[in-house]
Amino acid sequence: MPIQLLPPQLANQIAAGEVVERPASVVKELVENSLDAGATQIELEIEKGGSKKILIRDNGNGIAEQELVLALSRHATSKISSLADLEQICSLGFRGEALASISSVSRLTLTSKPAAQDKAWQASAEGRDMAVQVRPAAHPDGTSIEVLDLFFNTPARRRFLRSDKTEFSHIDELVKRLALSRFDVSWSLTHNGQPIRRLPLCQHQGARQKRLAAICGRAFAEQAVWIENQYQQIRLSGWILPPAACQTQAACQYSYVNGRMMRDKLLNHAIRQAYGEQLSAEQQPAFVLYLELAPSEVDVNVHPAKHEVRFHQARLVHDFVVSALADALQQSLAMAAPPSTA
Ligand code: ADP
Ligand code: MG
Image (cartoon, rainbow, N blue to C red):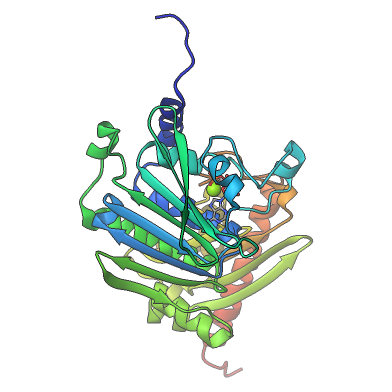
């Protein structure tokens, strides 16, 4: 075969292979876009585990009519314009690939209205050339994105989908993780028309505690100790369960780096080490932890789905997390211990 340029849809479908693994990955990309747009209200409607429909509605900045076509094209982003921006990244997105990828493997409609624009407009991309149709629409300030029939044109991917129930459980788990990263946003999630989660915006500590209980369970919310610690420019806060309360079943294990949810090996290792021998091999640590450091100290461009980061000073971060957590756990033990008779 001679060398030839791939048609845009195929190129996008190949890119989609990296980030759009299942309906939950679509939800992740769409929610991150809403958060980057400053939304304080995010509503998700899911049908058939997301394989029939994923609808997200937000009250963020919106996309201007003249930018709708660009929003759906590959490598188009409003979030960075130089390598220097990438090294200082504060937004969740920056690759400019999600909407193009998702629209190449589904029937996607984007409807948006920035507050400064009189009317809403709607766009959808179709076919091999991914030509975008734009038409007027009715919509309040903000953006809605509807993704129908995910993987309808990529049968190999579609075959990998599990039952609706399993796919939805991935979405629910993801919404839980995201909701713990943004207490200042209200969330709602429905499946096949049934309300599954409604998490109002949290304005005070009591409301946060309530959301924590709704997501991690009452036992976790009541027994976890709050930690807040800082070393130079590195800050760690969140909740960790004292060893005596840790169970052997799967536990709440949520960690975030600069607001981005992570399953980070270095963090997990540091957490386990902080518990030390107080935790048996069968017991599961339980935590919701937020690590914050200067954006220039972490590389988020390691994995297309951004599941991983790389710390420039990995050793320093690791040791700080170990000592901050060990201190917090030590203090919780001291408080729980019976008064000494000496
Ligand atoms: P990225 O998030 O990496 O920039 P995306 O393909 O996810 O790439 O989105 C492309 C662009 O579309 C974004 O940079 C943003 O300007 C715009 N956009 C996407 N979703 C929204 C939204 N919900 N509200 C406002 N703008 C959005
Ligand atoms: Mg994005």
